[in-house]
Image (cartoon, rainbow, N blue to C red; front, side, top):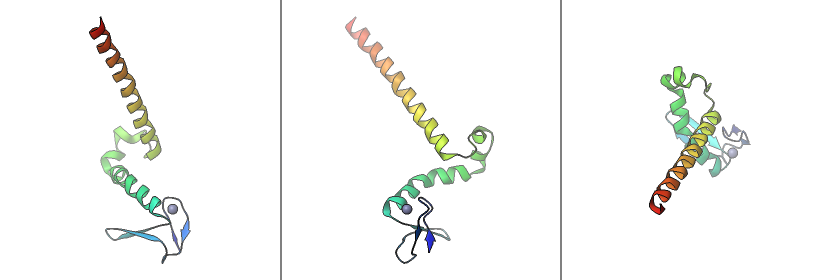
Length: 95
Ligand SMILES: [Zn+2]
């Protein structure tokens, strides 16, 4: 039996979906879990870098969800700002 790192499900090795990364092998219960793992891979690599562990990201305590939520907040903020900006442009054009 192997353990899916994404959902934690125990899967029969012969039936699991395999992904090879260097010398490591990962096993998944479904293609969905494998895709999720690949999507998060860039974050995992980034967070394992010494720079990410230093000052700037120290407060995140390497919590992927915190960073993703903060990014969502930043994107939401940018959307609000761009809407305000567009409103101003419309006002100028109409006025
Ligand atoms: Zn799974």
